[in-house]
Length: 196
Image (tube, rainbow, N blue to C red):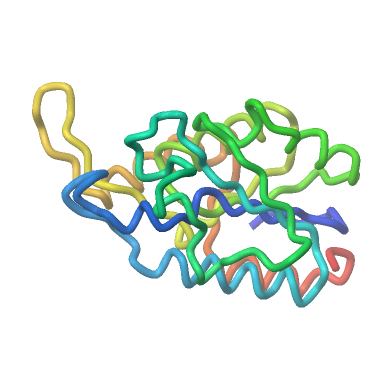
């Protein structure tokens, strides 16, 4: 894992919302059932060390979507429920930077390192990560704090949730971000006195 030199790294938790509990709506299966618990470990660490964090909430413009604001699936899951005062940034597309003030908030706070977790690996996590990398942030994606759903290919072929997850991570690793695991992140932070 690369040396983490920023003294104020931001945790970005993307779309950890109740609507993603409906597996059949998104695919036939989901991988990494512990993703939310690992995201909570990261969240606890950030809170304990008073580091900047951002909750991203997808608010679909489609009223039939589970993630539309009028539907209960829009709510952020209790396991990572924002505390009063923690920023919640609402988006309506697959990047946390489009139509939001996330970049402005990061830049105004002098943040140049972001750690990304959430749902789903191949959609909003990947898109946000690609933009973060292109904007020049030192970007880390936490593989075991993200998850994907199975997909049907353009020829009707089946791709398992794990295959989708691993493929999405492979495509961004060392190009837009460094892919890491929860324990690696926390261990690296604890061992780098300059990081806290």
